[in-house]
Image (cartoon, rainbow, N blue to C red):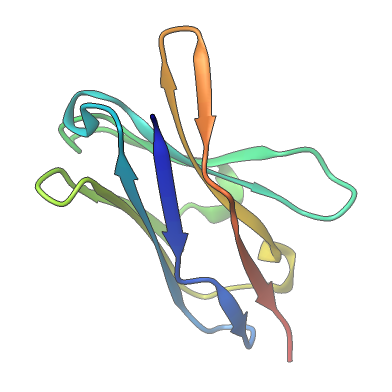
Length: 116
């Protein structure tokens, strides 16, 4: 079955960096768009970034443009989210996601906390 193993979250000071990883299995990773979402306490889950199967097209929510970079390694079935210049408002649980047909699949989430 589809599985994601996310890692890389943690506590970081404002202005710091983190790199999230999501290792996928159970489907043909290289032919699907992959995304990162996040959900802060009391807020709805929002799309942060997505990347097409070949990695040639990426999209970002306005609030992270210029600070976050999504990438993928199809040989390793892994998608990454490099997060720089982190702000307290980036604090959230970050989820790996893909959509296969009519179904959305989610990782377990990794907590990112930006605080001094």
